[in-house]
Length: 264
Length: 264
Image (cartoon, rainbow over all chains, first blue to last red; front, side, top):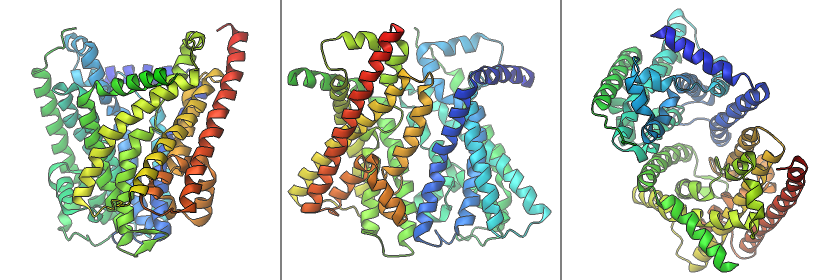
């Protein structure tokens, strides 16, 4: 399975590297465009010293974790955005007759290498923010940072898969998924405690975006939780990631089983 | 001519009206982002009472206007003319007995009309239900806002038309397009009000054409520009519309000469 994925993605990457100039322009363009989110944060911090009790370096850590994890998830699973088009054109029928998992085929239909631009930009912000945030480094905190990024990537991916299944019923409405994928990325760049209570509950209990950056960052920064949740939650991201992924997988299987072709 | 323009605008309107599911999904996503941005800006006003001419209510109103205008102004991802140039279809377009630029402008105004009604009004209404939003009582402000919004669409169109024409010279029109999107997203005031910028950056932003696309109509709505200042603001927008439309015509003429040399 993984061998096939590697070969498919390898071919996509080689094809994109054929046009060198185009590749670099796209990479730089993506880096700049996605950096605008952080530029907006810097503009806000030009007016105040803290947002919801978080300094600019601390928000930078949230941003960095979210950005790096999301860029990875986007690179691997971002092609789910093309699912409505595949369904509409009847291409998904072809997917089903091939002896390979349907999800694997959909996500390996493309690999947007330009999204490395976001990954690079986010890594730089994360590094600079960590340097300015006075982190009292321990093995535990360093390990937490790595685990948090991986877990966040899996959470984003699980949410993406789970919500993408709505397009099997509502082909036209795939843009609504963006609210929680790209919107989820945007949301987790900010401290969760600045949001309204309905939104906080949503991202803690239902769509677990608070576990991507907010809770792990509290541990890395050794910061008291403004929301007053127990410290145990700060260690829960890997468990939440596994659960989200399982939920996504179950929803996907269920949706594919009920799939009815457009018949064209 | 006017009749033709009207018919083209109607096509532009109808083209987007054909997918109600997409419209609902888009409204949902815009509204969700509106909440995120509103909470982020309100976190600033937790710390202080005003930023420049903005109080908390202005900032929230800004958020829902900017979200409502997002699709109407359409600064992201419009490559239709570039695609016509790339495919060579532009040669056929240029033979038609109508003005190439005005043909696209008429369609774009129709599209903007659809997006203003169906993608602009609903998120604003949701925002107005949940937050304390400023709604002008003075009919003069409503009239000026409408004029300002139409001018904003024309400026935005003229700019998009211009960078699409880069396709005459560059094989990869997307590179130029992404850089144009970076500049217009940040300097138009689409993601943060220009009043939040450091002074030098705000001055720079108002010297560029982008402020005429988003920030100008919002300033009119908020009543930040009145009397002579209001006339000046509308005049500035009109000036940018004329300059950018003129530049578009000049560049199109240069591109057509190149097209003839290459034989289409």
